[in-house]
Image: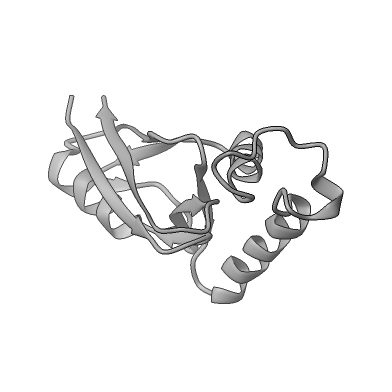
Length: 140
C-alpha cells in the first residue's frame, strides 16, 4: 500500500492548499478503486476539504475561526490556563479539536473523486511559521 509524506511550510494562520500534491500521489499509485487517507501529524493545525475557486472563501473561514476562538490575550479568553507557548497556542489546539486532522477521499481510475470546486487544505492555526507534515496513504 503506497504511502508518502509531504511537508507544507506555513507563514502564519490560514489555509494552504495541497490538492495538486495529493492528486499527483494518487495518479502515480492508484490502479483501480481505493481510499486516500490524509493525516496531519500535528496538534495545532488541521485539514479541510473546501472550495478552491474563490479566495474569499479562505479569507472568510480564517476570519470566522479567528472570531470564534480569539488569542488567549483576548479578555474573553481569560479562562485559558495553557499559555506558555504564546497567546495563539491553546486557541490553535481548540481550533484543531473542532476541525478534522484526518480525511478519507475515495479514489477511482487514478484520481480523487472530489467535486469540481473541492480542494484539500492544511488549516494552520498558529501565528508563526511552521513546517507541517502530512501523511498520504492509499489503500485498495
